[in-house]
Image (cartoon, rainbow, N blue to C red):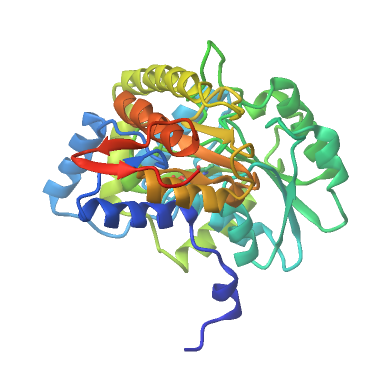
Length: 405
Ligand SMILES: Cc1ncc(COP(=O)(O)O)c(C=O)c1O
C-alpha cells in the first residue's frame, strides 16, 4: 500500500499503544493496574455537563466560528486575565480541538520546512512528531544527568540560524518538574532578544504542589504590544478532568491568530459546538474541583514517591506538579521499552517507557489513579524486580510464579 513518507516517519503514540495493550489484557480478565494514564479520574464538572446538555437540548447544533464561540472566547479571556494577568482581546484567542490541536495548528502556522524548534528534554512525546509533521526539525536539549530542570545556557547552545521557536512545558510532562521563575524569566527575555516564538504549553499550570504558585510567562515579557511572539497554549483537559471533550486554546498576536484561523478553517472548520459549551460551563462554573484535584494529586504524589523509594536502586526526583513521576530504573534495565514490557507481562502494571520522552532508562508512572492502584502497582513492580521477593504472588485470583532472576 502506498503510504506517504511523512506518515511512515510518524511514531505511534506510546501511551495510546500501552492503553490498547492494557485494555486487551483487561478484556481477557487480567487484573491490570494502569500507572500509565494521562488523565485524572475525577468526573466532569457539573457546570460543564449542564452547559453542554443545554446546548444539546436546544437541538440547534451547527458550525461555529472557526476560532470558537464568543462565549468561550470571553471565558478564556477572563481566565487568562485572572490567572496570568494578561489582557487579551478576542482577536488574540483561537479555540481548537484540544491543546494538542492548538499546538499542531500553531506549528503549521509558524514553521517553514527545515526550521528548527527547540524544546528541553525530557519532553512530551508529541513535540518531535508534530514538528516533523510540519516538515520542521525537532531539537531536543538534553538535561543534565539526574536533573529535569533545563538550563538557559544549554538552550542557547542549541540555537542555530534555523531556529524558529522554543517550546516550554512547565509543569512538565513527563518529569513533573516545575521550572523555576528564574528560568521562565530568562527564556522569555532570550526569545524576545532573539525574536523567536516562545510557546508556553501550560496545560498543567495549576497542578503545582508544596505551596508553589503557577508562574505567568507574561510577568517577564517586555514586549506587551501585539507584535509579541509569546504564545500561550492551554485547555480544559487536565485541570477540569475533561480530556474527552477535546477543547484547548491559544493566546497569540493577532496576525498569528489570523493565520491559525485560516489553517483551522481548512482542516477542521471549527471545534464542536456542544463541547465548546461544556468548556464555557467549566471555566465559568464553580472552580473548587481544580483545587481539590490538586490536593488529591499532591497526596497521591507523596504516596507514590514514598513507595518508589523503597525500591532499591530506583532514583526518584519528587515531582513538583502534574500527575507524573519519571523514575530512573537504570539500576534494573537501561532499556526502558524492554522494562515496561517486562512489567506489563510479569506484574500486569502499565508504565510508559522514558525513551519516548527523551529519558531512556526511566519509566513514567502516573499518580492520577487511586491510592490502592499506586501502592499495589509499586508493590507488584517490586515483586517483579527484586530477586529476594517471594517466589509466588496472587494477582486477583491467579497465582503468578517468579521464574526469572
Ligand atoms: C504537555 C502536554 N501538552 C498538551 C497536551 C494535550 O492536551 P489536550 O488533551 O488538550 O489535547 C498534553 C496531553 O497529554 C500534554 O501532556
